[in-house]
Image (tube, rainbow, N blue to C red; front, side, top):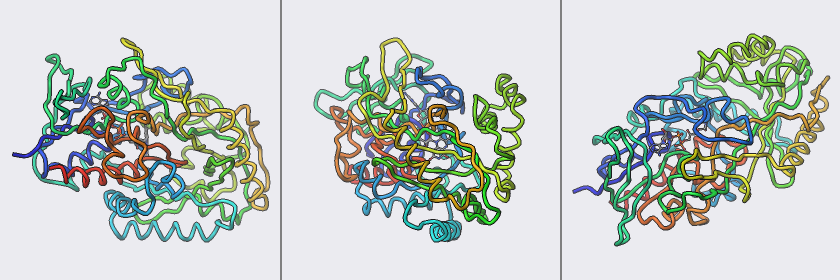
Length: 458
Ligand SMILES: Cc1cc2nc3c(=O)[nH]c(=O)nc-3n(C[C@H](O)[C@H](O)[C@H](O)COP(=O)(O)OP(=O)(O)OC[C@H]3O[C@@H](n4cnc5c(N)ncnc54)[C@H](O)[C@@H]3O)c2cc1C
């Protein structure tokens, strides 16, 4: 008889891991919602600008129902900071890329990457190579297509905690569903509930209902300036290249005080700052995922400049113009004060603040961008650093920090939950660092790695 694996969460990692294990184990997936729904306010956030937009989602596919499909690798520095041996990760990144793209599509994107590097990498900045496949996927469906096989049981309900048997093996997951509390027995558990829910699950399973789960990091983003470029500036071409089936965007990465900042250029109409300041500055992408919000429609109508610029960006036509907004994303690393606070009977609260040291580092990097591309920039209007309005980028990471071993490679202990035998963590919460990269591609690579390791336990 096959051993039983219970995977908690049917989002990006849960979908990939469960479909990869389906032929070796009897797999049950626990997903909190039958409906695909965005989550706006399932956490409190005194730091602000988290619940104004979708910060994650539920239902089969999890947050990938609403994601932007932007794929980017962590570089060797980031991987080392994350406790992942860079060379060891290469085959898993290859699997992750081919999960999303065919061989020829990937070759097209790599060609664009190489050209972008050749055009701008001259010793100061490096290129952040981001790929957006045109076809957006619900990853539950994609994973089931890529990894077909034996049936997977889906149980709808909220996993409350994992209970380990007295003998040491994991014995069950407690799930709150429509008909009350249910126990689902398991030989192994994979917690893939996402970077904000998995720490709650871990703390509750370990009897720590008031825990502070430190280690949270993201790459908060802010618009910082507008520029007018020389008509022949190389920055235009690198900012957006269309291949047959994807878009390749190059950001410019600078490192100051051991933290990275990436600079992306987005088309603009002129140098006026109204479209990149105030609550409407991301309005079109907010509305795409939440199209019937009267508050957001009103905001949109109040900032037509932002609408026109968003259309220039989405249709790519603006990348031929001369005006651009400067959007930065800044690296965060785990610090003891940033994380998820649990309080019995209350919603968890997230603190994702940008520290003064981080702000100083991002500021220094922006200055280096202006120096490096001084000859390309004919005019600029820069927002004072004190008025950069940061927004959380929803790459909720690092919150399992205190619940896992800090290994230097991705052997099984990297994923193992301390104090919960036979339980593993695989989602944003396990990622101890991510530089300025969107985490999704790396999480798919880690899901492949964990599935390979778990097969040896079958
Ligand atoms: C709007 C938006 C756009 C994004 N775009 C990108 C992008 O372009 N590229 C990128 O790399 N990243 C993107 N991200 C980040 C993205 O969230 C992650 O890449 C990815 O979805 C994380 O996967 P995950 O498996 O950790 O969590 P999720 O995909 O969020 O999945 C977690 C799942 O667990 C379920 N769950 C949670 N708690 C419980 C519980 N207690 N019991 C049972 N089920 C539970 C949830 O319902 C959900 O289905 C985006 C995020 C948002 C919000």
